[in-house]
Amino acid sequence: MNEFWVLLTGSLVGITCGLTGVFLILRKTAMIADAISHTVLFGIVVAFMITQSLSGFWMLLGAAIAGLLTTFLVQVLQSGGLQEDAAIGVVFTSLFALGVLFITLFAGNVHLDVEHVLMGEIAFVPWDTWDILGFSMPKAVWMLLFVLLLNVLFLVFFYKEIKLSTFDPVFALSIGLPILAMHYSYMTLVSLTTVAAFDSVGAVLVVAMLIGPAATAYLMSKSVSGMIIWSMTFGVTAAITGYYLAKLWNTSIAGMMAAMIGALFMIVFLFKPHDGWTWKLFKRMKLKDTNVHV
Amino acid sequence: MDALQVKKLSVAYEEKVVLKNVNLTIPVGHLTGIIGPNGAGKSTLIKAILNQLPNKTGTVHILERPLNPKDHTVGYVPQRNAVDWDFPTNALDVVLMGRYGHIGMIKKPSTKDKQIALNCLKDVGMEAYADRSIGQLSGGQQQRVFLARALAQEAEVYFMDEPFVGVDAATERTIIAILKDLKAKGKSVFVVHHDLQTASDYFDWMILLNQTITASGPTEQTFTEDNLQEAYGGKLFFMDQTKSNKSFN
Image (cartoon, rainbow over all chains, first blue to last red; front, side, top):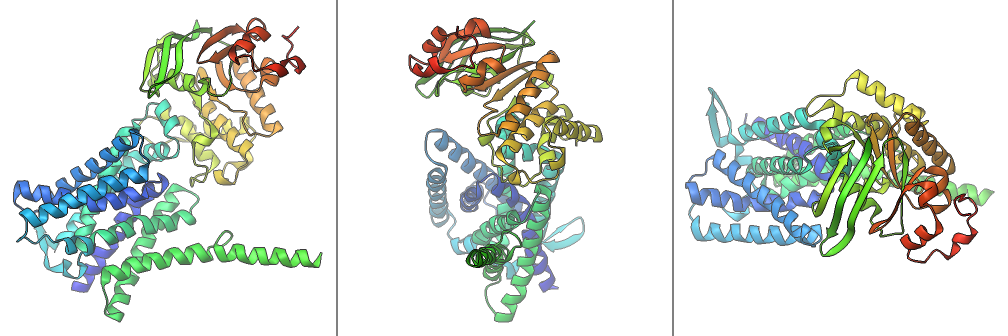
């Protein structure tokens, strides 16, 4: 049974991050996920300092606010003339450092340590349960299901709006789409996804799960909806294969899952038909052959 | 009825003034060229009219009303290089985006919207490419898709930003035929253009711009050497050799 919960948690992380990550790739803001995955620590610590509780709700709220703050600060620095990557670098290191400082200063004896935040521990997920409506499930599963629901609802209602404001914001603005509101709503979802996922798998795997499957899907998709399906498929595949390989080799589960994301990306990058790397190499060699014979 | 009325429009980026005290009144039913040298503020003028710039003063009326996207009176073709053509979508899907304003938030495109989009794709001669990934289209084909998207908006007044840049001759002919057809249907079209050789053939109305308006009116009155020299700051020594410009006599 414990194995089932770990697999379910991993798969839910794969599905939720895979779904959310698609628009990070398409909007070319993949690194904002890296920033948010670190700054949510700041949000969680501040939420703990204010409420003195580690309840999931306050953590989600604190993380959402920290994510929005990150997005907002990056936007401000950018409109002040800084490049996006520099703005992200400045904002996330500062907020993350503040988070670490606050933990050591005010939350030293609570179960909130930096290593846990970065690496997570998915193997402990089954023992931390919540009873809601008579169902007892791991806390991580509840939170991931909740955030997945939010993500799905957002896409059901605003699919064409987020697609257009991603593809052509200038045109979107001309037909009256609230592109800034779309941007912030989406970044809120990224923050919520991050915090729901990182309690079980850690901030580093969250970034891998948000970016890797979507980037792999981008290589082989002709439509946004196709990219979403592929991205979620790759996320789940990496989670499940990663779990069993970790078990086989008795190593870190989260680490193995992240490694599988990288492996899947490389496989698609190298062997994808028509414009994969090996395919191109093969065609180039064939071309050289014909040149020699002519 | 005036298609466009602009009063005391000024735009500044940071400290730099890009447009200074622009005043325009243009009646409906004209194919208007917006002409001027690089950095004259041609694209900025369109963006300011479409209310996309924060640092703007002055008033704009389209069909004698303040701009309201909910009226669906305005169609827009942004510069082709403003978007990433590797975005995973096909030609028909991009044209369908022209219907989003009519469809409204949350709702999905109907069969009728898809039919309209398909017809617009047909109008630009691209129906065979409906399912083609936009990244696999040539520059000219991409520009046609953008034009088809604007047609799908079923607007009264169209603004097009450099639609002839980097397109093949066949596409240029297709686009100009469509623009003249729009004019024949009583629509008003504004086109940012920088090729002086073709300008007087294409447009029956002209706005000559260099940060401020140097001339605006019917082509035969505005497209004169004096006005052009003023807009281009005396850098037009080659103008004597242009033969296609009938107004130089």
